[in-house]
View 1 (cartoon, one colour):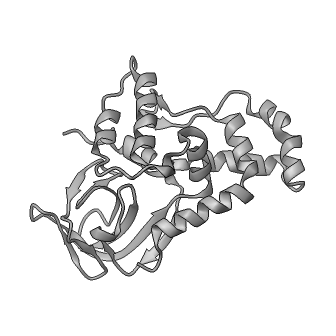
View 2 (cartoon, rainbow, N blue to C red; view 1 turned 120 degrees about the vertical axis):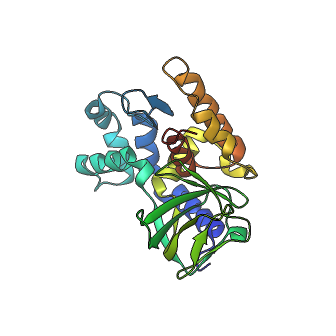
Length: 243
């Protein structure tokens, strides 16, 4: 791969320590922990109430760090945090082999010759992937290579289409800072062999148990060594597909 994900992620973490104190202040003062939005039927990190008052509270602290930071910048940060599940840093790849990917890494694959022209996949286990759009799981085998011009065929013989391009989706500053605040030292843990238990637990949420499920999901994600980007995408994908 042109970009080593582990190395890129390490570099991003180092940047966070120096350059994202403002982002840390905003998340700490404006965001609540993982929650299940009953009306929208999705997992989110919701905002605390009275954001305009919170800006007044943190403004001087932020401007001590960055004198050019204004309320419009504050609103832009909130807008990005609100769309956290859709954020990513994109890196085009010549190919993506299962053996080179860690659990929790995400790929966008453009396809030709099929009605659904794009898959966005999270590696869940050796040779196994979750489509975050449909919530459907695929077994591609541990010898699969995703490369432009190759047809993607599942272990069951289903053709998913011909690969046109492969893009690695990496976490942004917002994901990493949110992870430090909400999950603690998750990055010090070994990445779990399988992320399917997270998916299965997320499916069990309902009005009565949502607070407990969200807390368990956070603890499980931390133990699994994965960050906010795969966490949000996996748990929300779980609500889209009925077995």
